[in-house]
Image 1 (spheres, rainbow, N blue to C red):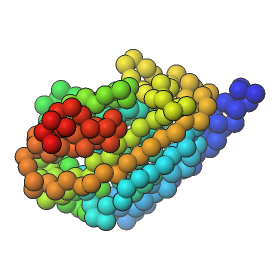
Image 2 (image 1 turned 90 degrees about the vertical axis):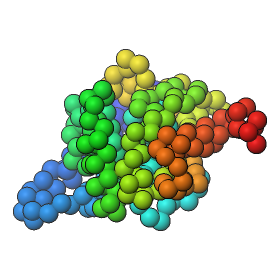
Image 3 (image 1 turned 45 degrees about the horizontal axis):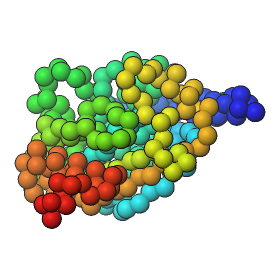
Image 4 (image 1 turned 90 degrees about the horizontal axis):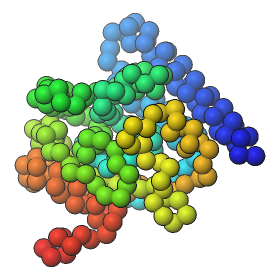
Length: 256
């Protein structure tokens, strides 16, 4: 029975990925013929595709909070590659991702065609990247980044890095903190995290062979980009997400 369930899930996932590949392939000649930047259309199609991809994964998703009515820089904690389709189905978003994702078979190509911006860790090109992010935000488009810089197992947050928040401050674009949590049988899910030396295929097979898990996504109170410098904003976003996931922290209680 488990093998049958796995095969059915993988078949559904393959069908969704096939549709995504067709959409991405269709957009290439359209952009060449029109000679226009169709990023807005790509974002809308990406949202549609990610909703189907999220539904093909063994998750039951609940969302709390209000979707922003204006373009924002979304900041989320990061647990797995699955964060991207699950958050990405909420709004037309573009993403900032590590450069290694670009090399993933099919998934990397789809991410590139969806308008994902890739960052190479330690490349020292923060200024250029902030310019790219600023142009994106100034174009009236949502953008999602993971300020921890890597995934974690969900037991605690890593430090939020503020260097990529300069684009929001300079553009006057507010921040939208997002907290995502994976729960299985009332406890932290240990299957969803994509960490360490894990590879995509092995993780995908484990995930698709597991029982359905709960995913809780919280859209928290926006943070005005003019309310502090980039490091202050990063700390505030981290504190808000930490409290949403783990409750009030001792430091925050003492300060209150």
